[in-house]
Length: 261
Image 1 (tube, rainbow, N blue to C red):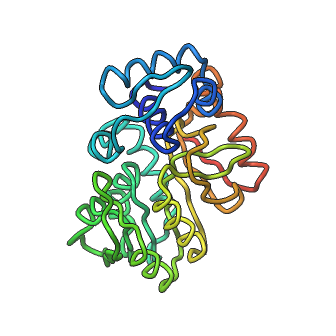
Image 2 (cartoon, rainbow, N blue to C red; image 1 turned 90 degrees about the vertical axis):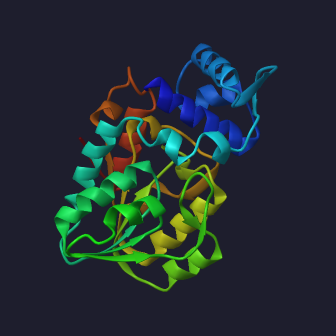
C-alpha cells in the first residue's frame, strides 16, 4: 500500500472512532503494528493525530486538513485506469447515479465517452466535470455540501435519491472487508449510499486496492448488495495488500463480479 494512501486510511479510521489502538489499526489495515506506529508518528508530525499510550487520537476534523483536495492527486493514474473500466460497464442511454469521491470524479470524465447518458451526481466536482458535455443530461441532486469533501449529503440528498430510479449506481467506498462488508468513514455518506443502493437496478463499486480488507466506521451493506467491483490488480498480491486476496475471494463467494485492472 502506497504510504500516502495508507496514511489517509489510517487517519480516517482514527478520526471516525475518535481514538484507536495500534492493535485495532493493525487488524483493520492488515499491516504490522510496527508499520502502524511509524504511520502514527508521521501523522503526529503533520499535526493530524496525537499519539497516546497504545494508539492515537485525532487532533482536528478530517474536513480541515485531509479532505478531497488532499487526496485528489494520490494514485491518479490508477484511479483513471479503474474509472475507464467502470465507464465501460455503462451502456449508452442509461440513467446513472454517480457517487462522490476522488475516484468517481475520474469516472465522470470517462462517462462522457458513453453518451448519451443521464447522469445524476452526488459530487460538486463531478458536476463541474460533466457540465455542458454533449450527450450528457446532468442532474445535480440537492443536499448539503460536506466541507472539504464536496459531497452532497443530508435529508435533501436522501429525498432526491428516493424520488428517482437508476439503471446503474457507481459507488465509491471507504472500505470493503470479508466479514464487515462495505463501509464508509462518514455516517452522512453511508446513509446516501444505502438510499442509492435501494434505488438502482445495478450497482458497480470502485475503489483502489488500499481499501481491501479495511473496516471503516459505518457499515453500508453486505458484500452481496453490489453487483460488480472494480479495483486494481495489485489487490490480488498478498505481499502488497495482505487483506486483498481474502476480501476478493469473499466478494466472489457473495456473487460479486470482481474486475482487476
